[in-house]
Length: 114
Image 1 (cartoon, rainbow, N blue to C red):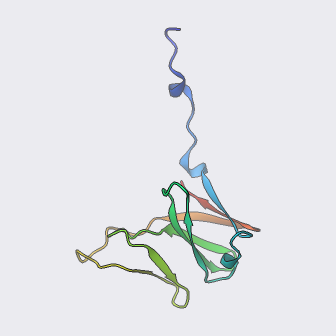
Image 2: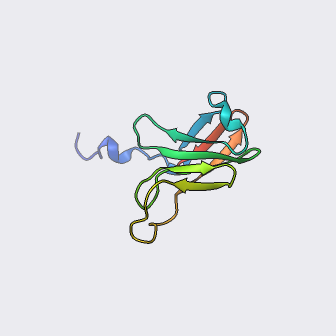
Image 3: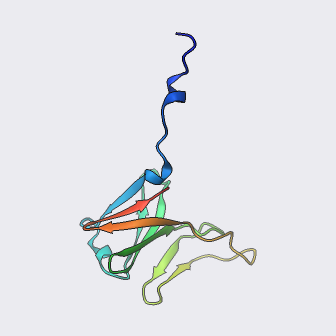
């Protein structure tokens, strides 16, 4: 067949904003408690987030790796702050941690990756 574009060029792409990662609170009941935080990792190691239950029905998701040196963030529930274990080498970080839109509904928290 000549004159027809290959299939890969005619297949529509799924917009990134339509992709969500779902956290099932029944499998991680600790996260139901306000002030709790968990790491969200995929098996391939490409997703490395921290999910924090900041107040009833409100969750914050952000990258866990520091923008400076890759150290892993930890949440301090008493102070409502993130802490890193590492040394700042050049006096400044390399930007803010990326945050993601979340939506809580019943036993699910959706993290929109777009």
